[in-house]
Length: 91
Image 1: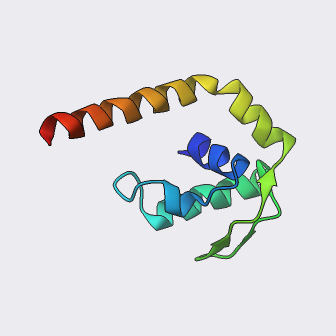
Image 2: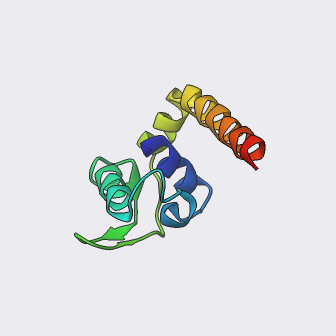
């Protein structure tokens, strides 16, 4: 989930609106974003224990994480395609 969140921040998308509620709860997403902020992967986001304002951007550490974990993007893309095929076949 951290890779997906960092990718969305890079693309200026809001993680709570993009990550499916089937995959994670709002609290889980906010906890992961708070972790990424505390650990220095994202900066200039504002957060408290229950709310995050998504206006930040990736740090060099965040960019490095995305670069070093490109295999996760490929795996995520394949999972999305499989999910779409399953939905199509069930439909």
